[in-house]
Length: 400
Image 1: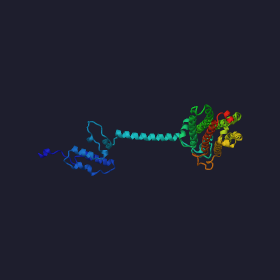
Image 2: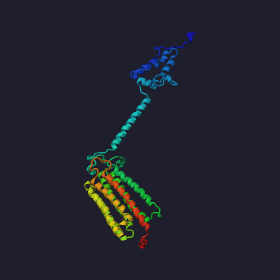
Image 3: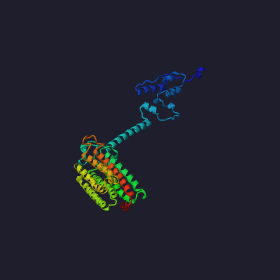
Image 4: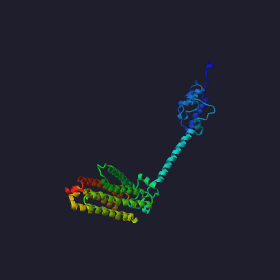
């Protein structure tokens, strides 16, 4: 009776299903010993074979835990599970997918690196063609010829010898566009159309100068032909800024003196046009004429000394300082001249060659001085315009 109730039992020799995964696991894991707890099911002889197999499978390491016994349902003829494939040396679709994904990610990373390295590089000064060798004291960080406007404009967001030159005048141009837009959109009760017309000469000169400048420094490395063209525009922009700066100051300083006002306006336009003509000469842009270029533009700026002395003689030094914004005009001239001198003598890179290749080179300092001088002049002509307009028209001024 008792024997009829006895369930089938298993022994160690009758349980190959339990022993085989463990031995294979030991081989695949480089003979890593398994914990003795995994054989507890073998010691309980009262368990059926299926119960022993299930318990042993649940206590395997996670890598071997999945088996046919643990599946909720089994269909005859079903493919081998992942554990069996791993143990038998076959690949799993899931493992193949993960391996393919990792390989694709690595290939994409290598591709991005190659594109990045191929699309952008800087070279030493010695590797540049002659038409790009403008400053011998800047050794590294130069852009090579690109022959691509796209690559030139992408270099705006890179670090190289022209980065500071580009951004100083690009941001300055944006600032002046904002100031000009605000000034020109004021209602007539605040700013009359005559004042808008006079100030627009200065705004146009400043925006064109700064715009031509950052464009030149951006596309300078495109090719010799393109670099020469935009270099000429850069020099023309300096002349336009100087001419536009004199217009409002002469207009308000000689507000009631039509003869001197017209004479000085004609003078500055003749000198400015002469500078533009000289700037269009190809040899004017060559490095050996750097001092000549600086001297030409300094002379153009110093031409304002003539009308300034005229005003001092007829109105007195006190009125010139307090009412004609002569002090601001002198400060503007000092900034322009100081920047031009620094540009001509190439300080500080001349003193420390190779130390200012990227930042704080002479051309960047010159750009900062030009931008500061333009804002100083705007402040000065705003003050003189405000004072002149509070006096009323010329007839009322003469009666006083």
